Amino acid sequence: MPAPKQLDPSQSLAALYGAKVRKLRLRAGWSQRQLGDKVPIAHSRIAQFELGKEAPTEAVSSRLDEVLGADGDLSDLWEHLQRFPPTDAYRRFRKYEAKAVAIHMYLAHSMPGLLQTEAYARELMREALPWCAAAEIEEKVAARLARGSILASEDPPLLWVVLDEAVIRRPVGGAFAMRAQLAHLLNASKAPNVEVQVLPFAAGSHAAMGGSVTVLSFDNAPDAVYLEGGPSLTAMVTDRRAVAQHCHRYDLVHAAALTPAASVRWIEEAMEGFGTCE
Image (cartoon, one colour):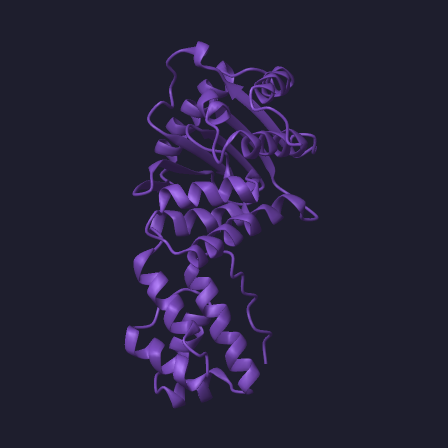
């Protein structure tokens, strides 16, 4: 019998739901087929749920909650899934990000998810999702922080980030939280696989003013580009001509930014405006 596929509950709410189903099923000592018989649905559907590739209907989720003795946990997660379905583009981006050997990003509005502190991520979530309950926010914060683990893996990708000055200047979470975030950013930039640049306002207009651009490179596959202009304005680009055009845009922004060394000094000076963390 082949080993079960590894689950990463940090990938999405669907993945978190699936991991919970698998954990409860294994605790009960049942196979996917046995659980499917109890619902009843095909065991292949159970497999899809557990892998986070498919979400059950409300009726099926309620039955799973009952059969597995989840005490309402699965039903609660299902509600979150319906309220915050990830876009197809974002789903694809997360998969591509996990496999990339190099990630080049221009961020117009916020710190990259891979380099966010807990306080910074929490404040972003609170502002972007004001209708979310505290428990939902914490789930999302945990999932975002878990993404950063790829930078500490045995073979981490190159992460090269160009940050608009607005990202540095805006005190997300207050002055102290922002200073801690900038300190975290500077510390991360000391790693040999992380480079940080700042694009100051003084650079004027530039090629990526429409939103954020992420170029993902792989060992044995063509580059891909993730575009983000807002929560509902995302796209994964794989067409080679379009990818080349977006890479050109990124290269122009990269060239206009301060050097990594100058950027470090610039961020250190900007930190002074946020007081101390003591």
